[in-house]
Length: 212
Image (spheres, rainbow, N blue to C red):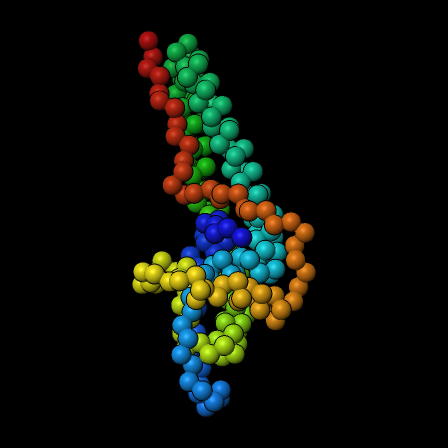
């Protein structure tokens, strides 16, 4: 699955940073010496649990809020168009009232957009927390079984990794092991989530017409 900034899923949403404890030599009979890297964000999103969670998140949170915000944005655009096309011939009081309505709706729209983003971020964090515990178990199990001393999450932008060969990337193995350890049916469809509204996006009111 492609990396997504949904994104709102882990993205929203940043990826969970998962550190792998070193394997105990006493437990395995040898000293682990392998180093691996993993794209934790990709792994979380690519498991059956992650794909289902993304679909549920899209259906319950992203789509309804996007639909509501799109409707409000269209209302503002319609009013802006009315002001642009008819403002010059409107009475001063009517033009002032229309501009006030546009400004009020724009402010409410921006507040609603920020509230929606905050709500989706909070819900996304819950989903990540619920899956990260399972993912940690899977990574620990894989590391101990395959002699890894360190596994680095390279999907975290703060991880100081300048280069890592694809031969030490264990992301696919972890996805497969996760689905085997926590079996669940794959989703029927796996569509990528649509972009969520961004707090920085706003509907700017039309320029005020000067009375003639």
